Every structure is written in structure tokens, then in C-alpha cells.
Length: 379
Image (tube, rainbow, N blue to C red; front, side, top):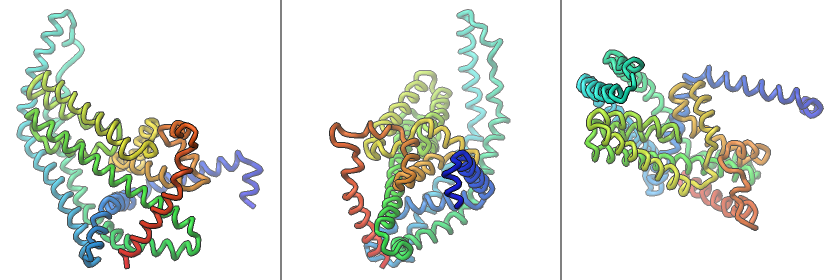
């Protein structure tokens, strides 16, 4: 009866939808303490599932496969934290020297501008390089790392249970949906596409981080591994993340080696992000995995407001998961069209119609094979 009334009064129905969305957003924000560790654990588990299933295919005992996968994640995470803490400690030692070098460059730039008749010193100063401010920033970063340590155990525990349950998820889907084969294939398609997207995004971000590390080594910069780690993490945020990741490397090159090296490093960052982000990424993931630039910015603002820095970091993966989910539901596929970076007609080959119409049987067959494979591994 409520639905009939909503059909008669579409305006009231629209208000009801907005009210439901407001309640959902308020719930996400209020439950951030619980949901953020869970979402982080879920993303790590999805990325790590190929390792676990690879061990299971080699007849490794299920608890041992899960434990090995969790241990690999713990070692990688611990290595990242060790790199960051050591780099911050070195930065505390080297920062006064950086301030002195930058002060020399600054004085030279001001003298050159003054010689050209530009009263730069009247409008520009070097107060933003105050050491006390940077030390406060560093100490805040150390406190943030300590907070990460406190939730690392919870994230690892949740990820362990998610991996343990992953082998029986297909069986549970079959039990819940019963004879609804289409619904079962749809759920498996969503799970498969999410796993493929996160896996490819992880590999491409890792390639970006390694490339930046090599660039910084060639430019003789301090903290090359840390700069590569920053590029790896921020690559999960398209466009904006690559710009933010380039700032510390370019500034460090400018301070240590001057304007020419700074320009070379900036061009190196630009080349890496252009090749990986604009050529390799669309070629591997396909155009259907793209998001509108406006959607990227809005999702960054929204998830950053809801869940803070972690939400900003996961904004694009979360929005991409939402897009994959809704485009597999016929009634909600229009939302995926709005989130996409290219209109559907732009992808249609001439005279062949939409590409989604032709490969659908192949996709269902692939999903069915994947489902049977996971069922076989679980058994």
C-alpha cells in the first residue's frame, strides 16, 4: 500500500528516498569506529584471496593457508610502518639542514625578483618553513601511526575470519538463493568484478610506487622508499592522489639539488602517472572500470567527511564497488551510467550494439566456472 501511494505521489516518494539516504549516511558516520576497521579488513582480504586460494589449490590445509595469508599481510604492513617510522626519525635529524638549504634558495629567488623590479619581499616570506610547525606535523604523524598499531590487531582478526569464510561463501549463496540461478550468477559476478578491480588496482599502485622509488634513487633524493610508499598509497585516489604524492618529491629535489633537478623529478612524476594512469590503467581495466572526474572529487569529499583520512583513501574503491554492484542490478543500472566517465553509446562499436549484450553468456559462464572452482576448493 505504501508503494502504491508513492506511485501516486512521486514527490513524497523522492523525499522518502532522501530521508532514507540521510539516515544511512548518519549511521555510517556514527559507526565509523566499527566500520572503518571492518572495511579495511574486507579490502585487504579481497586483495589477499588469490594467495589463499592458490595455497588451497596446492592442497594446503585450510587453517594453514589462512594463517599464511594473514602472516604475509602482517609482514608487509609491519615493513611499511617500519619504513615510515625510520624515515620520520631521520627527518627530525635532517630537517634543520633542509631549512637552511631552502633559505638559501629563497634568498636567491627574492634577489632575482627584486633585480627585475618585482617587490617580492613585501608580499612573500619564509615563515611557512618554521621548524616547530614541521616538528608538530611529524609528531602528529607518529601519533597517527601509533593509533594504526592499536587497530591493526582488530583489522587482522577481522581479515582472518573473512578469509576463513571465503571458501564457504559460494555454498552459502547457493543455500540462500536456492534455484534462483540468475540471482546466484549475479552475486558471483559482483564478487568477481570487485576482486578483479581491487587486485588490478593494487598491482598498478605497486608499479607506481616502484617507479617513483627508482626515479628518486636516480635523482639522489633522500627517503626514496618512503616517497615510493607515498605514491603507492595515494595512487588509490586517481588524479588528486598523484598530484599530492608528487609534492614532497619535487620539493625535496628542489631543496637538495636546485631548480633543474626539481623540474626533472616533476617531469618524471608526470611521465609515470601519465603512462600508468592514462595508458596502462584504462587498457588493463577497460573503460567500464572508469569513474567520472566529478564523481571522483565528490566521492573524495563525501567519504573523507564520513570516515576521515581513511575514507578519503578508500573513496574511489568504495565508489567503484558501488558502481559494480548497481550495474549488475537492472533496476539500478542507471546509477552506474551516472557514475561512469563515458556515456554508454561511446562504447558501442559501430553496428554491433552495446558490448554488454554480446559477452553476457561468456561472463555468466565464467562466473559459473569461478563459482564451481571456489566450491571445489572449499570442499
